[in-house]
Length: 239
Ligand SMILES: [Zn+2]
Image 1 (cartoon, helix red, strand yellow):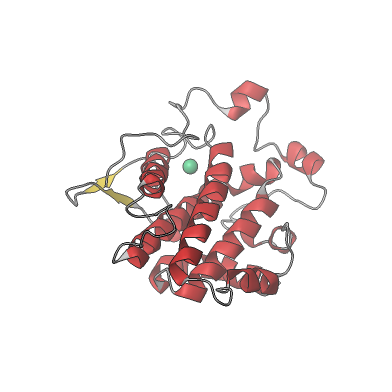
Image 2: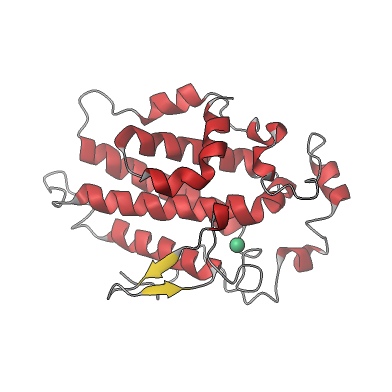
């Protein structure tokens, strides 16, 4: 796998052109946050996990995690691979949408390392298996381009009714969900305050909760991968 092709929502940003510059606002401005959302208060000094604050956790488009869990279950009579393929495409569209909205704020200057929560660093593996340390926007570009390429490959995601899914399809699906999880994990760890200012955190919480419940239903993610966000997952699925 590789990543020279940019996914459709990728930013051509070098850090000089940011959302804040374009709109002449400071997204870290406390008064702006209070204006946009009366329930939100600026993170306290040392508040490393603003996404865990109760007023944030409760913000979702769909309030019920039970409902999202039900949505994840394989419908009776439907082929498992078909269900995996359909959901992979849907989640990719949603993750791309959220990621694109942040593309001008997540730059090689703001995020020189592809970081996740708990001081995780995500390395990209190139086609020869070499681990590359790269910026967060580059990692996101690699990840979403890789997924888009995979979804366009009819040998992997067949479109004809009489075509079969390839052997090992589930392993590719696992890899796609790992990359989507990491894309969202970076947003939580590095851009949550900006997402609140844009009032996008209910969307992120909903997509993330659904994605995690779907992955749990079909064992698509390793426990050690989700561990740094386990506190958030517990809060989202029990609220
Ligand atoms: Zn970033």
